[in-house]
Image (tube, rainbow, N blue to C red):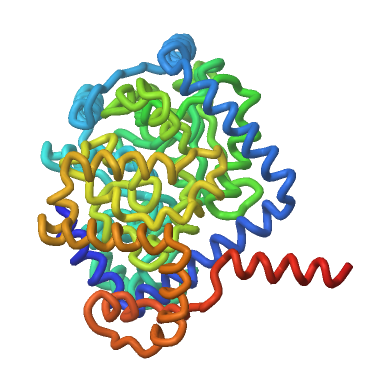
Length: 473
């Protein structure tokens, strides 16, 4: 998709007032929950630094840690598969399913399986795969992709869910969330019982012990990992921690940043297939380790910091762009700041260079990242690379590129000339409110509050503040 397509997606999202209001309400609750949990700034800073150290230690020697993980998993009876591409990873899951004569699969929420388009591959080869996370279940029924990386159906209201369930699974219409949840549970229980294979993602894979960890709130991932006779976990190379002792910190940072909970309802730790004497559990456990561009990222000292990401979604919740346009406008597996950071790296600037422009570079994403990934600086670098390689495409053509260059040149001249700066401030303070809402100003104010201009510059305000302080003394 090119920037022009993204611009159309953005315009459509901004003009959807009900969705914007719903999005603002839900995301504000996410932000409030995080603030309530991490309410001590000094403690939060210490936690972030510690979490950063855990991930930095792994990413800095990724090959070594992955080899250790493979050995530990093998000792536990977990079969490890390496996939260089998404297609290869999907085919591995298909081959495992066929090897046990299976055709039916249940899957818990997993962004990495969205990345590799696992469902399409399996369905194209005669398999039935059913999403079991409530949000994923809803969007699968209507043929959509996740809207948010931790809340896939964030954009769907309870009234819409009622209509979807009435049409797709044949229940009487209801808007009651408890009844809707109960109906989804009833529908899925039989799918769990007869599934041949259960598929999950991975939040943390522990190299020291060969343990696969899955964080959830609904219990469906636990069902996927234990009821079918085969469990397949799919993960990107970066979802690794070195030691079991790292888990409490990383779990707290992931869950607190994502939903504002102190701990999730379920924390599943899979240590291998069913052993003699066990009452339940799968007969086989497989771990698919996906590269899909990650090893290339690891080779760059700055870009490898992207691999520290926990996929908590906090950056999406605090991003002024995402909060207004939502996930589908990006037309990418990973939307928001995390997507702007990783999609051009995973899939290339030719395909996803437009995302480099989908950021205000305000820095909010970097300030809330629980592992201190410098998201704004990485996006800035990708933006420069995208513009250098594909400037005409990103800017809608050469005419627009020339106009933008002219505008920034004028801005630089005003900002570096005290006289021009003062004159521009006074002019905009006097006339800015009367400018007609046409052209770029019209586009800006159609979805934003008209800016108010001050005749005072930052230096003036600082001088006034200094004078007040001196006067108070």
